[in-house]
Length: 220
Image (tube, rainbow, N blue to C red; front, side):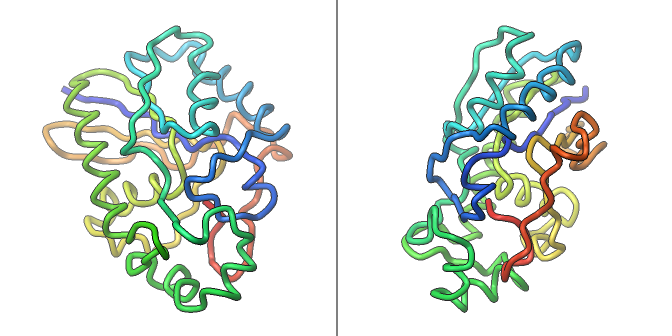
């Protein structure tokens, strides 16, 4: 029995477009993000879905709501799908983070599994939290098709587990675009990705390129 999980990053928010490390700061969706949502919803219009989960943050919730326009399922917020609790650096410009927190910056660039966010989570805590939530959702939905709207940091930690079997997999620098679709298959306790960061529903002008800054990937 195969459970199919559509693991989708939220649409573009003002924090993304302004180059901020959002964490759990609840930034609104911007105009570009709303265009992305319309196209994502059309992509899933005829895709059978049995359950719909989301992070409680606005940028993920509105992503789930857009897809649900054609499905009318209960939307189930889950705390375990929240973005990294980044503590003191939440909503800070990434250039400011690099200036004020050089050790954190160096870890994020080269060993993100070692990151400890000031007055926030450690990456080890994030890895455990999000993968525990994923396992719970899969256990609740055997043989079903599940949509999850969540965040870049969450998906990176799941990808590290599935692709590398360890939190150290975060070091491969995989980037997930806004509304990027990842298809995860779960069968007999084995997880594998059938598709990663699929943006085929977006034209080139809506595929925001990762912000290049001292961290080697884009703001979460």
